[in-house]
Image (cartoon, rainbow, N blue to C red; front, side, top):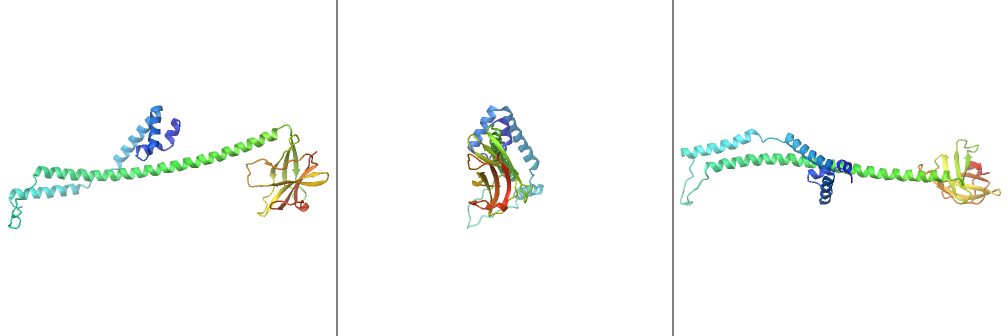
Amino acid sequence: MDASRFISSGLIEAYVSGLATSNEIQELERGMTQYPEVAAAVNDCQLDMEQYVTLQSKTPPAELKQRIFHIIINEETARENGAFEEPVTDEFPETRTYVSSAWRWVAAAAIVLLLGSLWYNYVFYGQANDYKGRYEALLSTHNTLATQSDGYRTRIEQMEQSIDLMKNPAMKAVKMPGTKPFPTALATVYWNQQSKEVFIMVNNLPEPAADKQYQLWAIVDGKPVDMGVFEMSNPHELLQKMKSIDNAEMFAITLEKKGGSPVPTLDQMYVAGKAS
């Protein structure tokens, strides 16, 4: 993985927020060692997170701190004035020992710090969830783009293969214009007269009904020869391979029931063209 992929993958955000797996941590740390710009991006992300947490943090309510201090002060004042006495009875004859005021102030400070810590943890936890959501969204987008990229690559390869076939000097192109009932229809047969391979390219044929299918025919010695049926579902596939043939005087396409017919339906002949 190069530096730009590290930076755009969302792995840095997961690393900084503590959501990365051990494998992802190892991979990113190797990237930080290998690419200075990746290490800089990690440092920037850490600073951004710290600044955001600082901006979003909330101080505990002032009245809560004052209330704690007020309780402690009143209790100490009562003890000094002798107004705060816990009687010793026969039932509880033991001596009462009270915590010193210094420790009470320490306890109060600890409570205040605890409250602040709770607020900080709350904010940071929210930020961690936010980064996790962003990381998952980035990962989903990355996977979608990768799938789309694979699809485009496959289509390009199919088109390149088709173009290479058409450029072959042994390949003969047979234009098949529309018949009188279907004047706008058009298709082309590519016939390799050395290998005898035949390919069909649909230029303009209407989409057939679900129970219908186009069928290619070769006319040999005045008789139709079945060359197979073909699909219309993949517009990115320029050429579809049909059955091979040695000689042909003409080629034609008819619309038949799905799966093809042993003989052509002449009133459903969409295109036809001479091979000579």
